[in-house]
Image (cartoon, rainbow, N blue to C red; front, side):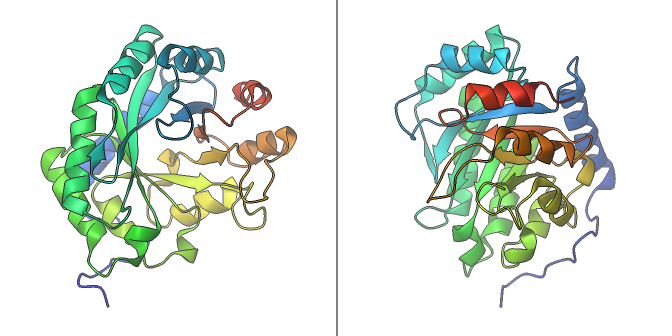
Length: 271
């Protein structure tokens, strides 16, 4: 049994005014001067060769993106600071926002150190928001690592716009403490990887499941534009259709390096 209690899904706890203020801020960031609905792109330092910041930012701008998220940490380690600085310059020159993201828990969770690492990455990159990717390591930990992470993170960054990226369906991963992330003011970014499981991971299914914990109207689902373990990518027409099945929400794409120009072009036309 876990050493801390969990609140039931759908229950809003904590400082309601603070949470509403954060939600309004995130909503306003997404709605500025842009009507497209697929607005963000994930970029990695450690998957293949180091991406050129100017080339990546220019491609994103052509595709109508409003933000990039740059891989900035791996566990408690902050990655290439010079590259993060170049990403900040390249996005700023093109009027794009920049987030930092990182996978926490590998090889084993160090929640306090990992929280401090993402805060340091925010500083280095002068990031506009942050995305924390917590998955099986946090789900299976015996200690209350999610609670420990968010406590340290919010001590250092009490109001900073932040998202949790994780499994597409909380129903299938009940041991991850979803509620504690939501109560700490993290918004939800479901991994809606229909390409890996067409029966269970459509964006619509993922959004409805995550909405048991997070504010539905500002969920930001991530589309899987890649092939993995014998699973082919979705056809472009189905990819577009899947976004249309979740009206009004903004989406983002995993990832630079695997998404095709044809996919970006089709997604850029969705309003």
